[in-house]
View 1 (spheres, helix red, strand yellow):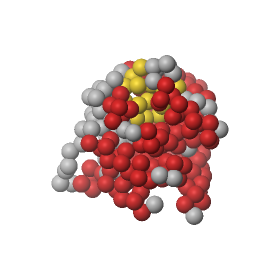
View 2: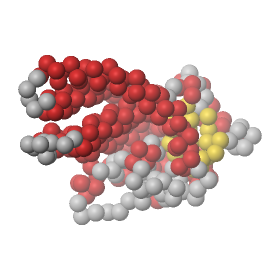
View 3: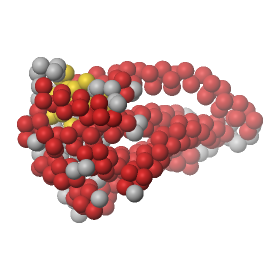
View 4: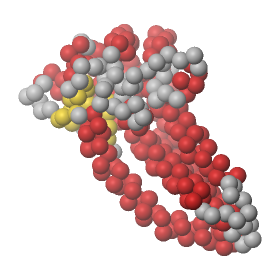
Length: 302
């Protein structure tokens, strides 16, 4: 039953990516249509429709170029932000063998392995294609976790690679940026009769509040799913639980800026310092990761 649920969840996750690919461009088109309709003061709808299509036509190469640039520099930016460095098999044969054996067991290409020289316990995966993927461990995680716990963490990260999680994040962030740009254009437009259109407020709520909150909710769900897959593949929930417990005691990586939720969401546990707040519900909604207590509780029931 568990593996059926996991396969269903994986299928739903992949369908969500496809859904986003079609939904977000449609949302951008509707935003442009509303923008040009208001710009023409609700007089010439056909012209507004034409301008929207023409903007999409001319902007599509720029959007595609931006996506290509982001994907191309993403790895370098992430590694620069985290000060990670690539290691070879001779540098740490044990961690290489662990990851390699896991990949062989599932017929996956071997990812490159990088290390963060930081006295904390954390890990993340990044990729755009399975053949060009990376798993990054902090130095302290390798030293403080035993072999079974490292395997559980590695499976967690490999699951993100198998489930297209990075693609979901990149696609969503690119279109959030596009909608924010439309909102900025709208706010820079000089309005004779209505200096602050309702559309501006709607786009503001979409680009800076609603869509980021949806993105964070998806990020938290991915962590639950990756935990469950790790347990299913290792048949050892105790190792995953103990790994999470150890990681939660010291997961903060000083190099990660507290504002950078895009990079933070990639880690197995938030690398940013977290503080308990009276408004715990709001804190959870704004978090890239679910509370570690909830993750452990679900794994104990697994």
